[in-house]
Amino acid sequence: MADEFSMNRRQFLQKSTLLAAAATAVGSAKAAGAQINSTAGLSVKPVRLGFIGVGIRGTLLMEAASGIAGAQIVAAADCYRGHLDRAQELISPAPAVTGDYTEILARADIDAVLIAAPDHWHLKMTQDALAAGKHVYIEKPMTHSWEQGEAFIAAAEKSGKVVQVGSQYMSMGCAKRAAEFIRGGRLGQVAMVEGKIHRNSATGAWYYPIPPDASPATVDFKRFLGSAPPRDFDLRRFFSGASTGTTRAACRPICSPTSSRPRTS
Image (cartoon, rainbow, N blue to C red):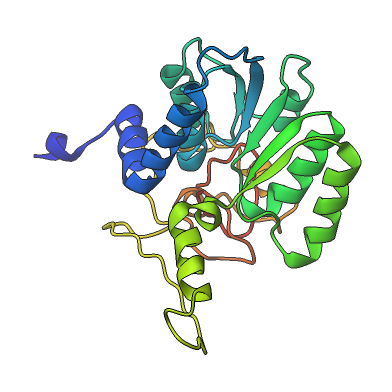
């Protein structure tokens, strides 16, 4: 019976990605790809991409990008070796991989980066990427704290590069229709608004299993922490999103590591 419930690293990564990814997110990615690719006949200049963080959310972004005409996945960075191995298994031709996101930024063959790392890394990585002349797509939230917002905006404006924050829910058709419904007065006078999004999953949000091969040999915990307070090696913090500090950060596709509180995107 024990064998029946055992899983290797590849099975773990496949199952955790599927569990964590909402079907709507996958559907949206495919729909977006189909919409972009419907421009067949137009001359599309290739966009060479680097991925910083290829855990659950980063892998979804990478797979979506692989289906878009003109997008070329060149390299990926992450603090867990298993995430990098998985990226090379999924994408063809296999991207170059590294545990240091600055190596991605130093490459002349990368035009833009997609960042799906812990929240406390968002400002730093975006600033570094823009300073290196890269366009940036950054997963929500834009910054770890609201106080960092001005520095983020200043860096984006100074760079002259394209910077996009992934708050897709705010731009989805259903959100637009809801706004029109309210503005049209069909609800009467609105005194209070309360919104919730539920994840219908046995594991819940931010709580994921730890890969069987995760260890100090395969997880760069120090790099993951970055500017966060020093802590002892803790796989639960890195992968499960357990709250044990001031930041959310862990299982997010981290390629850049850090944070006091882990989380996955």
